[in-house]
Every structure is written in C-alpha cells, then in structure tokens.
Image 1 (spheres, protein in one colour):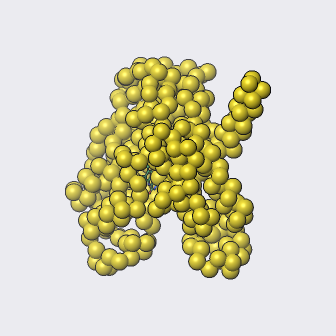
Image 2: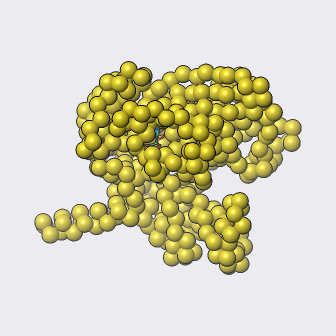
Length: 356
Ligand SMILES: Cc1cc2nc3c(=O)[nH]c(=O)nc-3n(C[C@H](O)[C@H](O)[C@H](O)COP(=O)(O)OP(=O)(O)OC[C@H]3O[C@@H](n4cnc5c(N)ncnc54)[C@H](O)[C@@H]3O)c2cc1C
C-alpha cells in the first residue's frame, strides 16, 4: 500500500487541473486491502485514471487508487471468459485482446482510463457499450471488507450508468472485471465512420479506423487537458424530439430502445448555440468538438465550472433541453453537481464582497 499526503493531482486528472488531495492511497493487492483501515467519518473517493472527473477544488479526504493487475483467460467452449485487474489500462487491454484473437471490444479502442472504471459508467462508443461484454464484476466493500461478485444483471447497466453510480458509489471498490467474448464474433459497423467499412471488415480494420477517427476528432488529454464528452446525450420524450425535429430538421436524433424516449446529440445542440471556441479563463469549448471542454492552459476548476454552466444555460434557453454532465464533479468532501458548485461559487463571491 502506498500512502501519500498532500498529493498534487496534476498528473492524476486528464483535465490537468492543479488541485491536491489530503491523502492518496494506492491499493494493489489483497494484503493491501487487509492493511487498509476504513474510517467512517472520512470522505473517500475512488480515483482510477482520472479521465472522467472534474476536481472542483482540493479534495479534503482520502482518494483510493486501485492498481490491481493481471489477466486470466478461460475457454468456455463458445466464448472466452477473460478476467482483468481493475488497474490495467483499458486501451492496452483492448489491444492485447485483438492481438490474441479475442474479438468484440475493438469499437471501444482508445478510450482513456482503467479497466475497473469501465463498468461504472458503462463506457460506450461506435455503437457498442462495454456492458455487452461484461459477465461479472468482483468488488470489495471498503467499510467491512466484504467480497461480492456481481452478475451482469446485478450491475444494473444503462446508458452511461450502473449500480456503481448509485447504491455502490464509492462504497465498493471494483477489483476485477470478467468479460465474456463470444467466439462467434459479430462486427458492429452501423455507427458513424464505421459505415464506410466493408461488411467483411476484420476486427483489426475496425480497431484501426476507430483509433484513427478518435485521434483526428478528439483532443489528446496528454497535450490538451479534457475529460472527453462533458455532457451526456440528453434523453427526451418522443413528442419533444418530434417537435424539435420539425423546428430543426438537421438535429441528430437516436433511438433508445424505448419508443417513447429519444436521444439527442448534445454536441449538435451546443454547436448550434455558437459556442465552439467560447472561453472562460483557461477553459474553452473545443474548437472542433463542441461536446468537449478543454483546458487551454492554466484553467482553474472555477473556469471549467462556469463554462459548463454557460453551456448548459444556453442550450436550455434555446432548445428547452437540460443537459446533464457526464463528467463526475468532485468537491472537497466528495461528489457534487454543477448546480451545487455554482451555488458555492456564488456564495464565495458574495462572502468575498462582504469582506472587502
Ligand atoms: C479524450 C477522452 C475520450 C473519452 N471517450 C469516451 C468514450 O468514447 N466513451 C466513454 O464512455 N467515455 C469516454 N471518456 C471518459 C472516460 O475515459 C471513461 O469514463 C473511463 O472509463 C474513465 O476511466 P478512468 O480510469 O479514468 O476513471 P476515473 O475518471 O478515475 O473514474 C471514473 C469513475 O469511476 C469510479 N471508479 C473508477 N475505478 C473504480 C473502481 N476500481 N472501483 C469503483 N469505482 C471506480 C470513480 O470513482 C469515478 O466515479 C473519454 C475521456 C477522454 C479524456
């Protein structure tokens, strides 16, 4: 177990925000878990690759970094069952699967972060969600050390959602994930740029194109801080989607599997408000991809929060659609929301005025 105090998080969040954590504990083995002492009154937050987080201020508690490694493959006849440590890098794992002939995950290539984080928000890209391949998730309850293996069903997967964002949020540490990859591989080519591939495209071709398109379209967090899509694609009643489609025939609308609910393209809504390139301090709506907020250099958490607020308000005013942030907001004591952070910033400004 590695423990560090007053740890700078600059290299631990893909937004590259200059914040600190009171304590960072890295856990990498069962003996580390046994040595870990849980204190009920301490704020805890689980930090993996930090690519889906916005630290809104210094974190005044203990960040737990799971670093469990390893892969094991079982031949189940019609499928490969692959169990992977939570701390393994996701893209490296996808690449390793491809190299070893285990197909299915190629549409999810180049998503930053660790394997253990993938079930949390049920990562998705190019028509595939990771839930499609998750067999079970092994977790460890921090408060009392209870081990649990959650079946696919028990994970309660939904669009960018799972039980790990609700009842099990920050209470259960994911230690390993078991994937089920059917040997009868079925390619998914019906999404965006993948439609240009032949019907006989190989998993390698899909992987190569996904990597190429992502590298072209998305800013690389190593050179331009960001946390990927900042907002979720909003789900709205079908009647509202229909009314919007009449007013805005170009608006991309996606099916959700429920005919009463449609999903709208958040990036398109933001772009239509003329917000690409809009900047507050060091935070900017990316010039090429409106759904991504970036750190142009020296952005403060406040810059990003205020920019997110502006984006959400403009979209709401113009389209009557309230965007929900996909990026997790982390305040001094734990997870928070855009609304609560704005309220806190307003209170701080008022207090500063009164002090002056
Ligand atoms: C450039 C870029 C592109 C992206 N593209 C996509 C995309 O196409 N699709 C997509 O879905 N996402 C995308 N993301 C978001 C992000 O990469 C994913 O959500 C990723 O799975 C987060 O992994 P992480 O290891 O960085 O997790 P973190 O950001 O560290 O954590 C994310 C959440 O998971 C929890 N968590 C992490 N590990 C564990 C664990 N072991 N046990 C319990 N809880 C845990 C954390 O507490 C936190 O709530 C993108 C991000 C960037 C920067």
